[in-house]
Amino acid sequence: MPWEFRKHVSYYPANQYFSKPEESPTGKLWNTNPITKERREKPTDWTPERLINAMDEAGIDKACMLRESFLNMSYNAVPCSTNYHTLEAMQKYPDRIIGCSNVGPHLIRGVKNSIKELGILHREYGFKCTKVYSPEDSGPFNHPDMFPFYEKCVELGVVVFIHTGFAVGGHSEYCGPMLLDNICLAFPELKIVAYHFGWPDNETLNALAWKHRNLYIGMSGILGPLYYAPVKLAHMVGSIMNILLGSERIVFGTDWPAAPADLSVKAVVNLQIPKDLQEGWGYPPITEQDKANMLGLNLAKLLKIEVPKKYQSVAHVQASAH
Image (cartoon, rainbow, N blue to C red; front, top):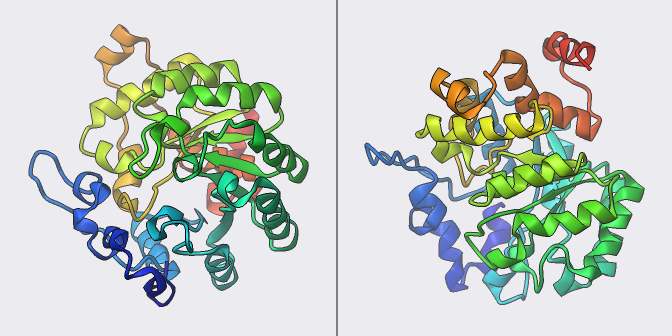
């Protein structure tokens, strides 16, 4: 979100979320070691260059980039970024950036209008996935008016990323995991990645993923703070693998810059299921293949993108196991 664009909304009071990230909820919590109180500084200028630097520091090859509208920040006047910023990054870094559209808030702008922009971005510019962020919208993501949007996503082969669980900004009641149930029932061919483990209702999301084969669990946004709480992360991932009998529907994400990319990667790389949790909770041990699945192979399969050569041997092992 370059400053030259964001300056047009800089006079709104809510802009301090970006200009003073240490005062925002994610700036205080998501980047702070709860024991030592050491805090990682959250960047103020969210540019593609800063994203690429964060990816390099974390060892991330490719990332799905999307705009944030935060339309309520300007009292529904203008968004703080547009899909054109994502398109520019895709053109500048074609081997690193995967386009994820955000054509919301869908209900406020009109679902028909969202569908029109979705078609342009995915048919003409190669975007692979789309984000639904209902906390800033006028209703939940399972509102009946949203169903034509999901139908169009099935038609275009677009994977849908949906914010689930608690919302820092906006209406948490619009994004509870249980709301996914009737969407998955109505659109069994629609591939959905439910963001943020569905936290704090992650067990509900796990049960829904067991019920619906088209539902994947996204780890984004939570891994930064869970780097400092490895046993809690072991419980969250172990519970998923226990009910789904594997790691094939767990998708890594950072939610940068809300959470540090490098700590998010390290949280998964260092992830282990202690013996007492295996014996007492029925969690399977974490293998290197599980980590490879989470850290990219699952998403690559979902988005139908080529796995980099240095990982193809791991991908071959995965393919041979199915």
